[in-house]
Image (cartoon, rainbow, N blue to C red; front, side, top):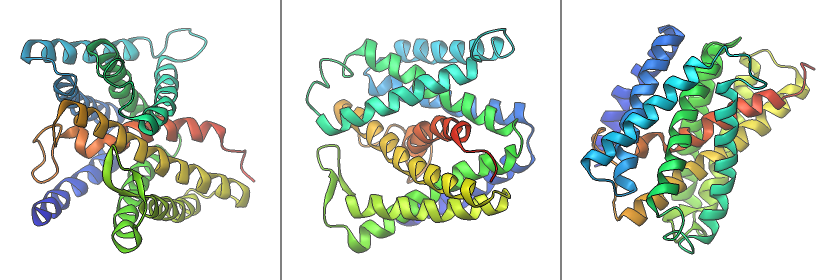
Length: 276
């Protein structure tokens, strides 16, 4: 299993990096939209939709993605992209409360089709908006790479810190394997990587410190994304969301952290202090 996971990562990660480096924004948006639509199919299974219902759910997610694109240049107080990103940020904050109290109240709220599907639409559309927004911005390629490297670094740091020092369970009713020590290791690793990224971006001292804090928060919220998908999988009695990536599961198994990290990374960049 470990060998399969390593082999899959060795193929997927370089392709992802090359795509972010060389593809235009439109192509990246299309690729990530396709991944999120595959994720929508998986999400439909997690909220216990049958084949037809899952197809309808995918169509709804695609329609909302299209609506965000159509309204991108509309004269609105807030752009459609930033609106859906902000909505997702609010959801991921609310998800923390659900992780803490799980499984209390889950079956009667998010375990129901309507709320579970509505959350899925927001959670799946927002990362596409965030990735598109990042890539077309100033320093877009580097910022997009930074987002994914932060998530990968946090995941790797959490894995090794958890293996070496993990003693106290982080969310035992949701994911018994995760530990507080592992989470701290992931946050520290991400903050160190954030300092390196800030240097590459040419940030000054004050902005670098703020960017390191943002990196730590991105790492924290990436864990929230992971645990949230785990709650949906646990309720649906599934080990994996899908089988697209050998040894890794489905799209949601691999990109659960990015679902939460991407919108919050964009939001955090808006709150960084001016260059100092």
